[in-house]
Image 1: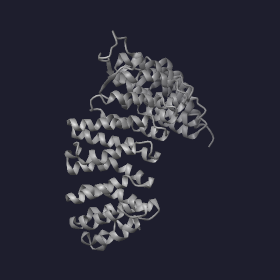
Image 2: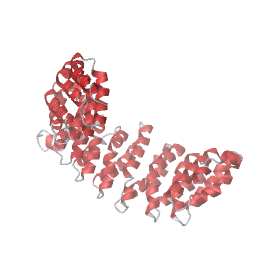
Image 3: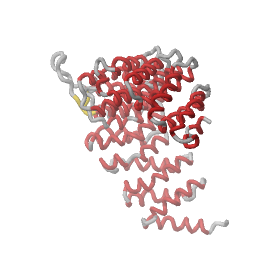
Image 4: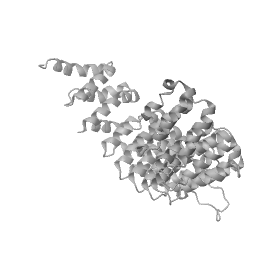
Length: 462
């Protein structure tokens, strides 16, 4: 019913009579079952889009206001969602102020479930307030600074449950994106961003691994949102390095998946203390040597190749080669090739497979000759792996490898492997091998190697 009401506007006489659907929708927005409430909220927004302006400002806005002050918390949860969606369309100073105060009150609600949903929509609400009321709301006496910024800080505090603090990173990203769209920034706006940065950094040391995992998984979005802010990376990049050394393997894995995207940041950051050259005197006022983010982070690659968790190493194997175009040929050969060679010899087949599947970026910078001696044993090991899914995965990467390694290397070293897969015990592997050979059998050596096996297969009894 909740889903269907959103499609009923045309069946009750069109937009002029759509207000009659608001009463049943309001009832469904208060029920205990989450899926019903979510469907009702989606239908309410669908109906709102078709309501005449006058009906929206009176009936719909009044319904949202009633939900925001109802005694049962489920109605207040629905109110959070609808206020955030409806705010850009509200008119009149009194109505805008009233709904903003409703939202602020819901952010301080006694029920954690209401605060959790309010935290999810805080970033959206800030964007809507700035869009509707202008940049003046970001001044010292503006609505964002006086009313909404304290909510950011309150949601990030340790007094809040984990489910609320989980939203801190996402909210900070939304705030950063909004400020990026407003660039160039005024002094007051830069000061406002400087209040946000400590909240992001605080999530790195949060007591809950789930909060730290969320920060690690979203860190590339954080970097993109704050890349244009002067000196922001000076605190964000060290925070990211802490995530790469987190005690929880899940957090390290999530951070590692973002490694290459963070390294693409255009800012220049200070060298880590252990890598700085000695300075004359006390060095208090001396400018610290600065390098690109990629040059600072690449030093972490070697330590990650020795991580205890196979999942961390597998994540690194998937993204490490993407650093090559950022670093350039000299730094790639010096800092990146040695750990990639280590990953090619890793005990875990998934790690070796991920390296092989992501070689194209490295090949474009340094060519595959540097890796060929380590590459061939890794391919052979994967081709004979006991897990058929690993064998299937390496078969699927053979066309890419053939392009990168060249026809001569392929026909001399890999043709026999391709023929061997045609006799694999698993039908799926044989099928994938046959599909690959249709592409590669233009090479004479491969074709000649296939003929005897093909003849043998044809002579088998049905």
